[in-house]
Amino acid sequence: MVVDMSEREVEADLIFHALADATRRDIVRLVLRSEQSVSGLARRYPMSFAAVHKHVAVLERAGLVAKRRHGREQLVRGRIETARRAYGVFEELEAVWRTRLDKFEEILSEADDAR
Amino acid sequence: MTVTDVRKDRDHMTMTMTAEFDSPIERVWEMWSNPRKLERWWGPPTYPATFTDHDLSVGGRVSYSMTGPEGDRTHGWWIVRAIDAPNHLEFEDGFADEFGHPEPDMPTMTMRVSLTERSNGGTTMIVETTFPSVEAMDQVIAMGMEEGMAAAMSQIDALLDEPARSS
Image 1 (cartoon, helix red, strand yellow):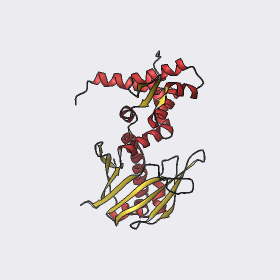
Image 2: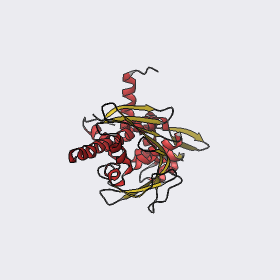
Image 3: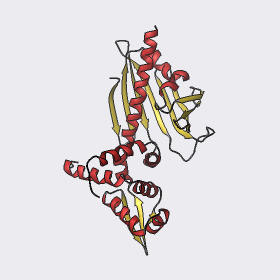
């Protein structure tokens, strides 16, 4: 699949901006685990319903969450596909292993010197 | 450079890393088989590891803990699935509670380590990490959002602070 680079940059920009706020990161973490109503979220934070609603809108624009209506409630769930792209579990794992292998080699060469 | 190849197969939830060392195979194997060597490289620099159990036989158990800069400790375990010294080691790697007991609700990863002798006397090591399911990967991401990725997030914060931008 060919994705226009500028489009991807815009998407990355939206994601990074969305995640640059501690409340929004917390919301993403919560709704990745279980669906939450906007009013339920509003009760968790010391801010108005409107302020929480605005945070959810920023996350929705970045594709990190999706909203659906259920009766009178608006329910928010995390979109793991976007979070996965943003957080890159493999990138994290690669970084862990590169650090390990640097040390691995250092210890091996120590033993070489000792011989 | 030690690492010669990294492959990420998102469809099969597997990452394969290849590294080459000048040392003979027995010495590279010892980095896994000797817990005193293993603990020197397994933990991240700020989270040194201590291995308490280290039974590298099929079904054998390995337990370790890592201590962070704030004195915080995390515990992990391996169960050995296959071993053929000095060429092959396969184990499950999981999270444990504060007493070192496996946490059944936490994701585990399958690790496959293969060592082969190179003609120049050196050793090629291939480390393959596989997540059991998309759900397990998602769980690692959700957990990372709380812990490991805080550092990455603060870097993003710093990046965003650079140019003055309005929201």
